[in-house]
Length: 193
Image (tube, rainbow, N blue to C red; front, side, top):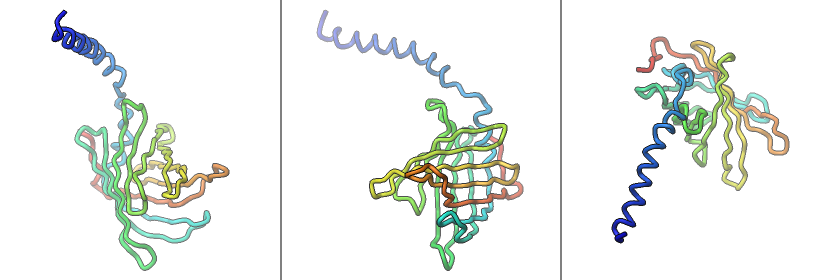
């Protein structure tokens, strides 16, 4: 066998194997349409009533707006959340992208904002009967510690209740950091194409 044939034939054989694997792999990642329902439910412009917590007690309030835009296939959504500055708090902006990841077989959210030192990645579990999404994440606090967070998002038609908790380090008790009541503005929801 020539040098050329010894290099090309194994590569060609690998392509044949890869090509035969692709259709079966694509079938493995097929997603039921119901997986996209919570993503579509979050579309629109939402007015936010925000309550901040310190030491498990309410410590302040603010108002903000979240604009959630579906990608044209309805499989992913972008979130842009803003709270204007007040006499007590600086301006806040957060931006995320989330959807159902057919490879990981779970919901995945990537979030950046003006408070975080790094990108936060959340993994979510949809509870259709309760119309509730539960997110979990772990994020470096910048001091070498990884902090666990839990987010609970309850869908109640044109209202979403969003609760963000830090889990204790010694004991995993949830400590509220932020609770938000989102109310969708009339006429802003958009069905996926």
